[in-house]
Image (tube, rainbow, N blue to C red; front, side):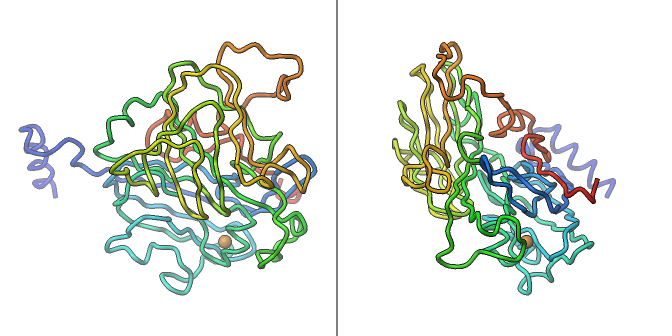
Length: 343
Ligand SMILES: [Cu+2]
């Protein structure tokens, strides 16, 4: 081994190995917790959350890295993690599907996933046990970003990154684990990163920013529409498009991801929202749901502005986390509350 290491070092110093030829080993520890989150005013929801957060922590690695994730299940039901989009070449037992690639991770137990990050871009991870409830209603999902060895030119221009995960909620089963995820149930709350307007957050930008939105439809259809700007659609399900195209609405089906890049050249206050109309309401009352406001720096806060007194969380769309490079990035803004007994 030592000799091989010296050989590789010599080759690298001699410029014979391409940059980044050394895959890095990344080990992450995660837990699954039973917590309660506040989705919307008046809607508290019992979820199973990775690291107790909704969405789960950001996992970020580089293309080709050796990834190892140990997950410990601190809940009372079994779960897994599926790495959506990853090819799992020679590692199919890490695909996270219960009774197909592994036995589900039982309460109190741990499981280690090992694979090479052989797919790039905006991926996500989610549980694969009883998906209609665990993923559809109990928030078992988070973002997984794999930086490509060779980004396309416009990616290098990006000045601000944001991750938006869309989901829906059935309020009738909010307090009862083991219920819901059935056809025709009332999905009447809609959220971005686990919150419905007005408890979503502004996305703050400066004129001249090149904003990359990583849109992830976790549990439902979305028709995302930002006002005042076009989006350059650059990536679909992580992969760069041969011909990026401009759009002002982008439709995502459940599981899909699109990366869009916006040149922030139109100062003002602009909403960005799901254009499936009832997705902009909370249990039938508008405004609500999957709505946020893009706030340009330097725009006066009018006294009638709905968010004039909003407490701003810079981490809500992972923009802070995305400045930090590879690693596992917990987001305090996404933490749920543990039941009293656990304190
Ligand atoms: Cu699960």
